[in-house]
View (cartoon, rainbow, N blue to C red):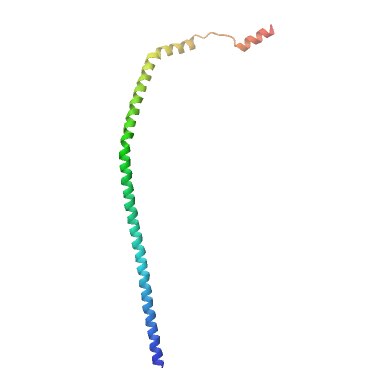
Length: 123
């Protein structure tokens, strides 16, 4: 009976080794599947990013024309306004300088209105 027990134990050990191999293979298979899934997901993300970037560039190019047109209209309007301001400056420069000089040079000394009230109140 000991030979039979020994053979039974040997069979169990071999079965255990075989089971360990199967478990190890299953773990490796699962690990490989996870790696494959991650790489596939990363590839899909990159493809999606590229697609969205292309859509954005297309949208941007369609609407960039209107931005350029608006910018040119604003630039023209600004030029017209600057020209008008410069013309007004050139036209009125002498008159403004004369008024400023008159105010600075031609000073009429007067008593302050509060001071006049005090003098009339004392008298």
